[in-house]
Image 1 (cartoon, rainbow, N blue to C red):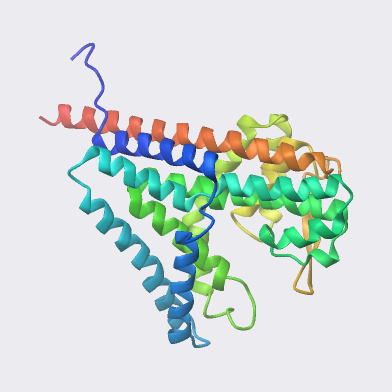
Image 2 (cartoon, rainbow, N blue to C red):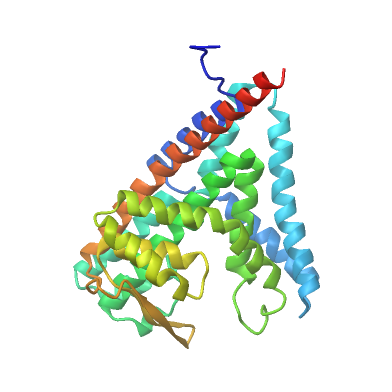
Amino acid sequence: MPGRTPVVSRTTAVFAYGAAAGLAVDLALGDPRRGHPVAAFGRAAAVVEKRLWRDHRGRGALHTAVCAGGAVAAGALAARAVRGSRTGSAALTAAAVWAVVGGTTLGREARAIGGALAAGDLEVARERMPHLVGRDPQALDGPAMARAVVESVAENTSDAVVGALVWGAVAGVPGLLGFRAVNTLDAMVGHRSPRYRRYGWASARLDDLAGWPGARLTAALAVLAGGDRRGAVRAWRADAGQHPSPNAGPVEAAFAGALGVRLGGTLSYGGRVEHRPVLNGEGRPVEVADVDRAVRLSRRVTWLTLAACVGGRLITDRITDTVKRRTK
């Protein structure tokens, strides 16, 4: 019918209002100082690991299924409990978004380290580095710490914000909690240490799969929101595939190009040295001021992600409505 108003589904409205409210609360408050749900999940996952651990992929897969499946099931039960109330559903979505995203705390930690570096206080910067990155701060000088912070802001924009919102748009509260659970499990057991090489295999592979769409969206929005769009596209296309992580590569390369800096190179994790390829070799070395620029880019990407996710749901509603009308 000409002039007919497109239908906006209840789930789309709930996600749009809830996600916007959750991001606003995160912007105002950051992560909860005590009783953080992600920390509680981590403790529960550690208990499961203690009971299940064997140097075996099958045991690791069971660990992943129990922990991630439990998070999805908890989200589904909570969503079912408020299904009859649009306000309740939106409030639950807002609470879930606030619990799983970490954009504001990410920015605060990055700027705290950047402030210490700007003041020339390398010891304070080194003390705060473990809050943000996993590499050995004692092996880093000032420029290397600034580079590590920019890389962490880029990667965590995808892991701690964009990926969660994408899965929230796809699967609601279960998607939000499930993605964050998988990402947390990867951080706990997904690395290639002797203990977790086999046991953490399933968590690492599932995290790669779950993070794939969010990483590409993060890279695309960094191109859109960055200062050097051509440079971001060029770095993404030329360098992303050289990174050992299939998801961190596109994100870090796009951020490097958008900011006009070089990322990658030599780094150290717990005494283990890695030589990673340089991302955006045409850029300049990272400076302390680039930390704040990276945080501001991350914020722009966050709000563009919300718009993209809501827009994607609206398009899906329109297609679904059109198909229903044509099949009547």
